[in-house]
View 1: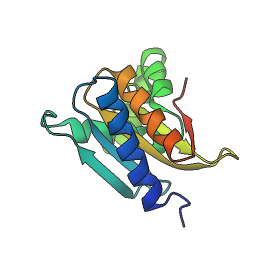
View 2: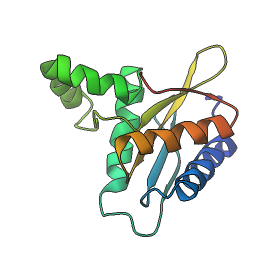
View 3: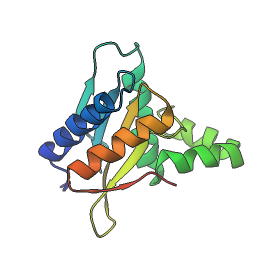
View 4: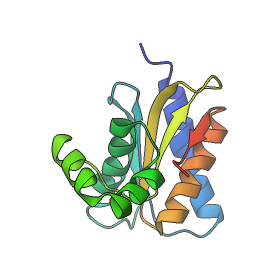
Length: 144
Protein backbone atom coordinates (compact mmCIF):
# COMPACT_ATOMS: atom_id res chain seq x y z
CA UNK A 1 0.00 0.00 0.00
CA UNK A 2 1.20 3.48 -0.89
CA UNK A 3 2.43 5.79 1.83
CA UNK A 4 1.05 8.73 -0.16
CA UNK A 5 -2.27 9.47 1.50
CA UNK A 6 -5.27 11.28 0.11
CA UNK A 7 -4.53 14.02 2.65
CA UNK A 8 -0.99 14.37 1.23
CA UNK A 9 -2.36 14.54 -2.31
CA UNK A 10 -4.99 17.14 -1.45
CA UNK A 11 -2.40 19.22 0.40
CA UNK A 12 -0.12 19.09 -2.66
CA UNK A 13 -2.93 20.26 -4.96
CA UNK A 14 -4.05 23.04 -2.62
CA UNK A 15 -0.53 24.34 -1.93
CA UNK A 16 0.51 24.15 -5.59
CA UNK A 17 -2.51 26.20 -6.63
CA UNK A 18 -1.98 28.70 -3.81
CA UNK A 19 1.63 29.14 -4.90
CA UNK A 20 0.47 29.72 -8.46
CA UNK A 21 -2.03 32.38 -7.37
CA UNK A 22 0.51 34.08 -5.07
CA UNK A 23 3.03 34.26 -7.91
CA UNK A 24 0.56 35.31 -10.59
CA UNK A 25 0.89 32.19 -12.73
CA UNK A 26 -1.63 31.37 -15.43
CA UNK A 27 -4.45 28.95 -14.43
CA UNK A 28 -3.11 25.44 -13.76
CA UNK A 29 -4.17 21.82 -13.82
CA UNK A 30 -2.63 19.59 -11.15
CA UNK A 31 -2.57 15.77 -11.09
CA UNK A 32 -1.21 13.59 -8.26
CA UNK A 33 -0.49 9.87 -8.64
CA UNK A 34 0.62 7.40 -5.99
CA UNK A 35 3.51 4.98 -6.53
CA UNK A 36 1.19 2.44 -8.20
CA UNK A 37 0.11 4.96 -10.81
CA UNK A 38 -3.33 5.35 -9.25
CA UNK A 39 -4.86 8.83 -9.39
CA UNK A 40 -5.02 10.34 -5.89
CA UNK A 41 -6.13 13.91 -6.65
CA UNK A 42 -6.65 16.27 -9.56
CA UNK A 43 -7.88 19.81 -10.06
CA UNK A 44 -8.08 22.33 -12.87
CA UNK A 45 -8.50 25.99 -12.14
CA UNK A 46 -11.09 28.10 -13.89
CA UNK A 47 -9.64 29.38 -17.14
CA UNK A 48 -7.32 26.48 -17.97
CA UNK A 49 -7.28 25.44 -21.59
CA UNK A 50 -9.01 22.26 -22.67
CA UNK A 51 -6.19 19.71 -22.50
CA UNK A 52 -4.13 21.02 -19.57
CA UNK A 53 -5.17 18.18 -17.25
CA UNK A 54 -4.07 15.58 -19.82
CA UNK A 55 -0.73 17.35 -20.25
CA UNK A 56 -0.28 17.40 -16.46
CA UNK A 57 -1.17 13.70 -16.41
CA UNK A 58 1.51 13.00 -19.04
CA UNK A 59 4.17 14.88 -17.11
CA UNK A 60 3.43 12.95 -13.89
CA UNK A 61 2.93 9.58 -15.56
CA UNK A 62 6.17 9.89 -17.52
CA UNK A 63 8.11 10.75 -14.38
CA UNK A 64 6.58 7.86 -12.48
CA UNK A 65 7.06 5.42 -15.39
CA UNK A 66 10.77 6.18 -15.81
CA UNK A 67 11.49 6.90 -12.13
CA UNK A 68 12.93 10.36 -12.82
CA UNK A 69 11.51 13.87 -12.79
CA UNK A 70 10.38 15.14 -16.16
CA UNK A 71 13.23 17.66 -16.30
CA UNK A 72 15.51 14.62 -16.76
CA UNK A 73 13.13 13.20 -19.36
CA UNK A 74 13.36 16.51 -21.23
CA UNK A 75 17.15 16.17 -21.30
CA UNK A 76 16.78 12.57 -22.49
CA UNK A 77 14.47 13.75 -25.27
CA UNK A 78 17.19 16.11 -26.45
CA UNK A 79 20.07 13.65 -26.04
CA UNK A 80 18.28 10.40 -26.95
CA UNK A 81 15.08 11.22 -28.84
CA UNK A 82 14.57 7.66 -30.09
CA UNK A 83 14.61 6.33 -26.53
CA UNK A 84 12.00 8.85 -25.36
CA UNK A 85 9.83 8.15 -28.40
CA UNK A 86 10.02 4.41 -27.70
CA UNK A 87 9.36 4.87 -23.98
CA UNK A 88 6.37 7.09 -24.78
CA UNK A 89 5.03 4.35 -27.05
CA UNK A 90 5.47 1.73 -24.31
CA UNK A 91 3.46 3.82 -21.82
CA UNK A 92 0.68 4.31 -24.34
CA UNK A 93 1.66 7.84 -25.30
CA UNK A 94 1.14 9.05 -21.74
CA UNK A 95 4.46 10.88 -21.43
CA UNK A 96 5.06 14.60 -21.85
CA UNK A 97 8.85 15.16 -21.76
CA UNK A 98 9.05 18.67 -20.33
CA UNK A 99 9.52 20.00 -16.77
CA UNK A 100 6.47 19.99 -14.55
CA UNK A 101 6.40 16.28 -13.70
CA UNK A 102 7.94 15.90 -10.25
CA UNK A 103 8.52 12.74 -8.23
CA UNK A 104 7.26 12.66 -4.65
CA UNK A 105 9.66 10.92 -2.28
CA UNK A 106 9.96 10.18 1.40
CA UNK A 107 13.00 11.23 3.41
CA UNK A 108 14.69 7.88 2.69
CA UNK A 109 14.38 8.50 -1.06
CA UNK A 110 11.60 6.01 -1.80
CA UNK A 111 9.22 7.11 -4.56
CA UNK A 112 5.72 7.69 -3.21
CA UNK A 113 4.18 9.08 -6.38
CA UNK A 114 4.36 11.98 -8.80
CA UNK A 115 2.79 15.37 -9.44
CA UNK A 116 2.16 16.80 -12.88
CA UNK A 117 1.25 20.41 -13.49
CA UNK A 118 0.45 22.27 -16.69
CA UNK A 119 -0.82 25.73 -17.53
CA UNK A 120 2.08 28.15 -17.31
CA UNK A 121 5.70 27.83 -18.39
CA UNK A 122 7.26 24.46 -17.63
CA UNK A 123 9.55 26.08 -15.05
CA UNK A 124 6.59 27.71 -13.28
CA UNK A 125 4.61 24.46 -13.42
CA UNK A 126 7.56 22.72 -11.75
CA UNK A 127 7.87 25.47 -9.11
CA UNK A 128 4.22 25.04 -8.14
CA UNK A 129 4.67 21.26 -7.94
CA UNK A 130 7.71 21.50 -5.67
CA UNK A 131 5.91 23.96 -3.39
CA UNK A 132 2.97 21.57 -3.10
CA UNK A 133 5.19 18.61 -2.26
CA UNK A 134 7.11 20.59 0.36
CA UNK A 135 3.82 21.77 1.93
CA UNK A 136 2.86 18.11 2.39
CA UNK A 137 6.11 17.52 4.29
CA UNK A 138 7.54 15.32 1.55
CA UNK A 139 10.60 15.46 -0.70
CA UNK A 140 10.58 16.41 -4.38
CA UNK A 141 12.76 15.26 -7.27
CA UNK A 142 12.49 17.31 -10.46
CA UNK A 143 15.10 15.31 -12.33
CA UNK A 144 17.54 18.24 -12.34
